[in-house]
Image (cartoon, rainbow over all chains, first blue to last red; front, top):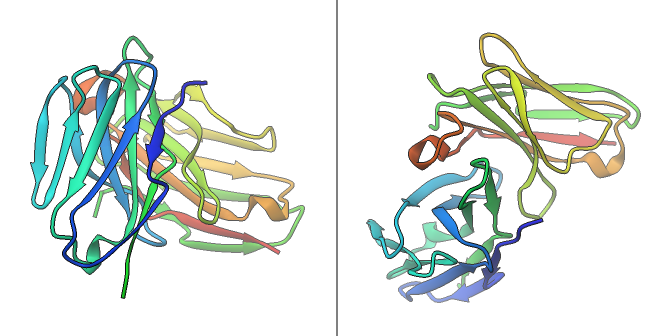
Length: 112
Length: 116
C-alpha cells in the first residue's frame, strides 16, 4: 500500500531548541494533517494544510505543504517540556477515496 | 476535549473472550474510524464507517468486526481474544468523506484493552 516516510523516528532535544520533522512520499497528496499524541491519550489535530506551498502556524508550531505535493514538514520553535509526545503526519492522496495515510510518528523527548 | 467519546476507558479480560468497545462521534460527524495502537507503535487503521455503511477496511482481523448504528455511534467487537490484541483502541470521527476539512479526523481518548 501507499506509505508515508516520517523522520526522524525520535528526537532528543534540549529545552529551548528548535525542532524539525518531515514526511515524504513518492505519491502526490492534496491534504496534509499534523497531529500530536500525549502518552495514553488520543492524537490531537495541530495543523491542517490544503494547498501546495501553504505555510501555516499554530503558536510555536509551523507546518508547510511541500511545493511538489509529496512532502510536508513541521517545525517547533523554542521547545518546552509539554512539547514531549509523538507527532504524526497524515495525508490524503490525490484522487483517493479520501482515506488518510499515516506516518509512523516522531517521538520527541526532552533531555533533562 | 475533541467531542468524541469512547467507553470503557480500560478493559481487562482473558484470552478467548469477546469484548465490545463503544464510540460516539462528534455531533454532526458522519464518518467513524477505528484504530489500533500497540505499545510504542504507530496507528493501525482498522475500519471506517460512513453514515451506517462500511466505507474502508484496513488491517482488521477476521476476529474483529464493527458496525455503525442509525444514531451514528459505533461499536468494535473483538472476539477470541489473544495476548497480542492488548493495545489502545481509538475511535475517530470526521464530517464526511469529501476533501478538505471534511477529512479532518478527531480522536477519542481511547480504550486500553489488556488481555491476560
